[in-house]
Length: 323
Image 1 (cartoon, rainbow, N blue to C red):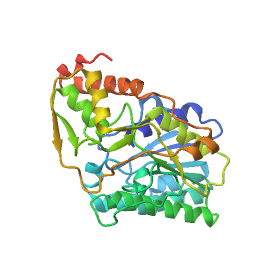
Image 2 (cartoon, rainbow, N blue to C red):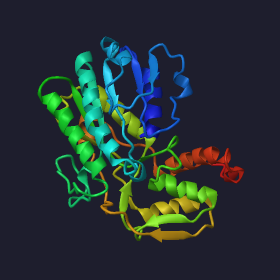
Image 3 (cartoon, rainbow, N blue to C red):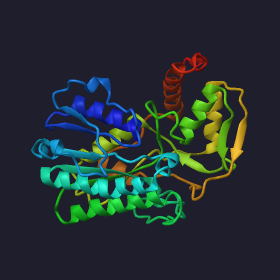
Image 4 (tube, one colour):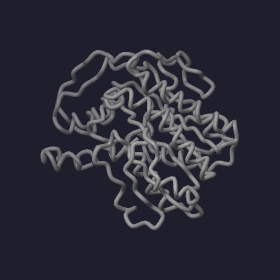
């Protein structure tokens, strides 16, 4: 969750009074990724480039007494990236989560796991509430991520039940916004970048599958509220936007916003791709007082403007979108 991580750490730096230290964990799937410039030189921030599937560096474990919160946002979240090295994806979710839980236990810190709506698989229940156990393939090409996150949740809740550390588990639904990787293969970034480049826009299947898109600032607000909530942490919490739409409807928004005249090409639907996705956020409303605020039109406009600026450096023609 590259785009959310940058916003989260920026907000923690600005609003982190009462917490002793911010540590940044680098995800191995983000080559060249760096923290926001606003954090450089912050007295309570340190950037560590490390793969959490490997033992944590001594530099970090020695400073455990200075840590009060551990946020685990590691692991590629887009299918092309997490399927590129499925073993590493699974190990990041399971071994990496265990390493960070050990750190939280040693530090007596609260731990938050960013899980995913993919734990629900291709759901038979709609919308998806936290008590739905899912319809997931444990043998398909998405299993390294789906089952890895389910195992990570199991680890976190086992630590919590044993009293080893306080845990919070967020099940994140589709999130978009500035700082996404243009090449990460998710539907929002795919369609916007293809439109800005003048390429054909790719739709998988017939486009009738549904998604619910949450803007990154809303997601970060939900994660921060969950981490600081005075709850026992024994249940996961869905975070996402309950406004459901088809991929074809999203395509219409992107076409209108970018003004592209490029055509649309259809590709086969990937194996185990969910047909419907919509969060029931009743629990988040009740225990966090949280709901998304940014409308899709506003979020897409900001996202298009950001991608246009990013692409302009490599291809000046992409700068035609002014926002």
